Amino acid sequence: MRYVDEYRAPDAVRVLLDRVSGLLQEIAPASPLQIMEFCGGHTHAIFRFGLHQTLPEGSVEWVHGPGCPVCVLPRESIDTAIDLARRPGVTLTTFGDVLRVPGTRQSLLQAAAEGADVRVVYSPLDALALAREHPDREIVFLAIGFETTMPATALTLLQAVREGLGNFSLLCRHITTPAAVRAVLQGPDPALDGVIAPGHVATVLGSAAFDFIPRDYRLPVVVSGFEPVDLLHALERLLLQRLEGRCAVENGYARAVREQGLPPALDAIGRVYELRGEAGWRGLGRIADSAVRLRTEYADFDAERRFGSRPTPASGEEPLPCGEVMRGRLRPPQCPWFGTRCRPDAPLGALMVSAEGACAAYHRYRGSSAP
Ligand code: SF4
Image: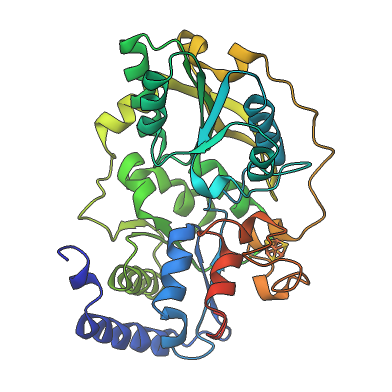
């Protein structure tokens, strides 16, 4: 497949591995270099393609960040969604991997089993189609994700406005990547040596969105795609920056990313959302300016305002170490519940729920040695 096969080609991977190994020999770190990839897609690619096993032993430790939007959904958001799904005449729609995320008392899947009307959709446009097909029902779309999914939700909302679809609304739980990265980097741990930034977020926001990392935290950054060649290429460029004593954002995903992002997507985001202010992140607590809500001109399409949803506030995060994993302080197998009380078929924490969660990745590929 064009744009995939060439980025998985064994010959290209071998060449890059040789170059990366050579650079690691040259740098000769006294302890493993700590490289953070804060996107769940990158975490899975590293495991899936066995990249963690191909580098010289003890040379690199991959530190996983909070880049899985399902994993960081706070319980309050699930509780609010359940509250709406139980209302007479309301159908709550969302993506499939949200359904098993634990709320305070239950998940959306469990609520559906008790009669709440919850349906899986593959895109916000599917939810819009349901609103057209069922004018007698209120269709609410639980919108989650980082800047990658914000534009699609925004464009769907604008379409609903154009069509005057009065039975469509959004439960907006979109979150912002830079704020989360800043929250993680501000902590004392881990002492990182470089950051691999998510190519899909950078496609929307532009690589310049990560300029604050070298400026404020003196860390080199490379924006990367999701194939083995992309990730090894990004690692090579991080090592070169270290060898040359530089800290900058480099774009290793030039086939998709521009420095200033994607204007139509940025325009849609700017038209529809405004910063919500402080927002709760599962495992990370409350983070300033880390979420968006609908602008007041779209208040009629805001499900919380339309239905006046007020779920019982959660009494605090469950005492699970998921946040420590997201901050890179703990590796999933070090969690006492990993693989025992917390498994993909019976997740205790959110990092085991989503296909993008670090714990799910470790569990799935744990036949391999941990990176
Ligand atoms: S194994 Fe489960 S409880 Fe432990 S950190 Fe991972 S998701 Fe959280």
